[in-house]
Amino acid sequence: MQSVLITEHSLVELKTMATAAFPCETGGILVGVKARRTVWIVSAIELVDERSPRHYTVPKGATRQAVMNAQETIDARVGYVGEWHSHVDNDGPSSADRAVMRLLAWFVPHPPPGGPCLVLVRGTAGDLTVHCYRARFPRLISVSLTATGPLPASDPTTPVFTSRRSSTKVGN
Image 1 (cartoon, rainbow, N blue to C red):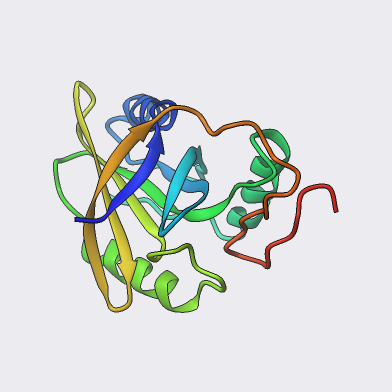
Image 2 (cartoon, rainbow, N blue to C red; image 1 turned 180 degrees about the vertical axis):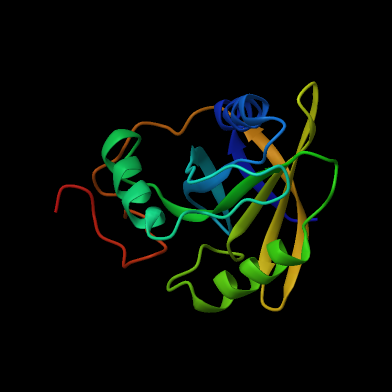
């Protein structure tokens, strides 16, 4: 089974945001970097428009600005690697989740290696589990998450990963 890397801090962030929103769903985007043939999720960013106990959608037009803010405040190397949201029951991806991820896999310019990620935080506030899926058109594939420490300090010669736009170099 393929693995996606995720910082321990991001796992804590995901569970904290899901617990705070309970009994409603919440969600947002995932930012990270390329890590050989997979991605390394560095942060989960919550993007809330309205809350519902059975539905979450990333607010229209919020993704690009959130990625740019993450590049300024977290690390210039990060880019969009996928989306996340909570499910208040222990349900896997819904048909709507699958449809959105199929669209992202097909239409995102410069997708992350292995396809965009969907992270679901599933369960009730006291009993949450985190699951990851990769969108490979037309399928959604379950993958394992491997917890890591933080992203190492920036190297100005390392290309910046931005899956929504082209890569550039830090400092140029």
